[in-house]
Length: 253
Image (tube, rainbow, N blue to C red; front, side):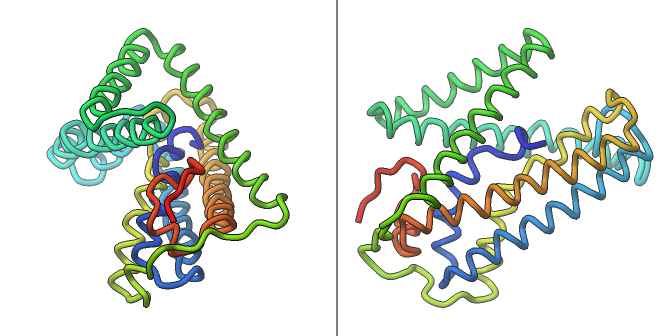
């Protein structure tokens, strides 16, 4: 759960959220609401998975509820648009942050993004165990990186938030701007449904699935709120809105 949810979102989306909210309170609220909505969806899938523990996840639930045509269309939408678009976004985020460590031209960033997709595809083709091992390593790496940022931001004394060079793009939060910010936040929480694909492989799904969805999604909500707190310890809301790579420590002011 944690490994499939945490991706590029927490490293890119805070910048986009800051561009559409007019206050720190609105920023925290949109992350909290996004977490609550994601948790509600995850627990719904937990109940469905416990009731129908078959491999296929949402495809199975749509098939049973609405018939084969709807589930067929959903499967092709996931293949052609949803999951492929998500994979592309993750790869682009990897190249954006990679360019902070190694200077890359826009063309080189595209090559790196494509190479990452090809490499991870090859790992998964090599076998489920190898793919699972890589997933576990990446999960701990992401949690370790975020934990390092959070701990240093919370425990370090004398921190002064970097001011922005200009005002907020959205000085006052409106219902529309807050909704746009929520779209980005929900993208950051995207991935909680992936566990449902393997529901048929889970032992004792009635017990394991609800617990996994609850604890996994709950942990991610906590980490995301803590990460935003850490960002705002070192960046003002205006600076957060101006800097896309908020986790690199290299900001313009």
